[in-house]
Image (cartoon, rainbow, N blue to C red; front, side):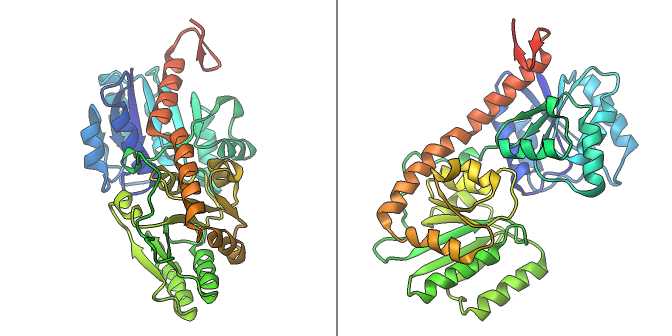
Length: 367
């Protein structure tokens, strides 16, 4: 079956890396994966195109492009595309128009929480799609509450890049016998990721005489970054907290740390946390629905109250115990196996087959 994967751009980000993972997993499988980039290529475009059996760059410059719709329509017909799988609002709208009179099935993965006119347009367009994919069960329930059509909704949890996998529990090389807890947080710098809570939590532990460091990986809005720097300076944590910016080799980077922390106020899945678990890092996460689901309500990681440095510090304090860290490392690895690329692609492949099966009932083939 021939599936066309669409995104507006393939710059470095969670859903963009996920699309590259999908293309790699489907290469040589029963899913013949093609790629369509609607707008600017982005940093991951060449890598993604090399994994796809065929690709097209439409070069959209305005919010809506009728020439892009017409080119996409011709491409769907010429390449005999059977399913178009979209990953954003803009590409879904263009795909809906381009699919007219082609008989192609439409699938869309919703990766985030839309607001304003984007939400209204998204709901209107996706109500005309064959399947809507939520990236976690908690996300599916959020989408239904927001008015997305429940009867078209399925939950297919996200995955991590295969390059993040480690065969054995993490050995915590950064610790040695020094008694230091080396923490890392990966994510864009903004209010919803709430790195300020982690900085303040580290400040609490340092004030108690504990040897704790935190590296923040990612870029974001300059004003938020400046506010982080101000807090770091005011709390005299310049030698404890670093802002590293964007790092290309995140799997290699994670090997230098003892634990992963994420203080998000909102997530639909938590790819960065899943990636950390896949390399065996113990995870300390804010107690919000998607992250709670990711670690089995606290069975495979530690949860703290969102926005509370004191609660976060309490969890991090427990990880000063090396034996407990090893226990949580083993648990993280076991849980990560449930979110492997193979699991995700198998579920999507079954979804595609169900849509194309003439005897399909409720997404399951009866023949």
